[in-house]
Amino acid sequence: QVQLVESGGGLVQAGGPLRLSCAASGSIFSINTMGWYRQAPGKQREYVASINTGGSSNYADSVKGRFTISRDNAKNTVYLQMNSLKPEDTAVYYCYARNSWGDYWGQGTQVTVSS
Image 1 (cartoon, rainbow, N blue to C red):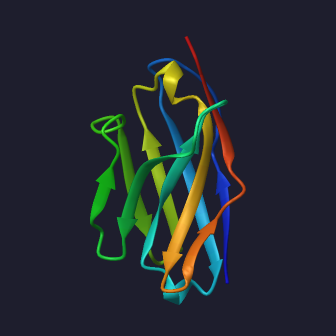
Image 2: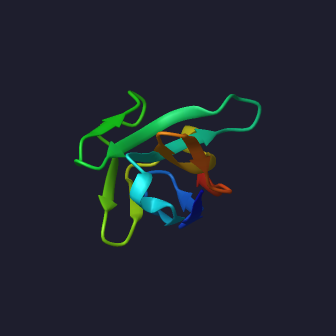
């Protein structure tokens, strides 16, 4: 089992930055990929970004050039630095971790971007 705890969400003005953190515990040795999804009201959950143990990252087109995902393997923590935020980035952001047995999810953290 893997437990994930997100932090760093909040209210920010459009154009501003925000950084999310996700700390993993439990069977962390088994994790190969960590990342973020988000879900806006009335919409399906959508992929945001991910990073593997080697440091290779991927991003959704909607956040490329604005968001940066990073990982501190020593702290078992993944970060999402979000810059140039837009009102359409408003959503609950969920951290996930993937191993050979499946995906694990955090409880989510609210990000609200005001115009």
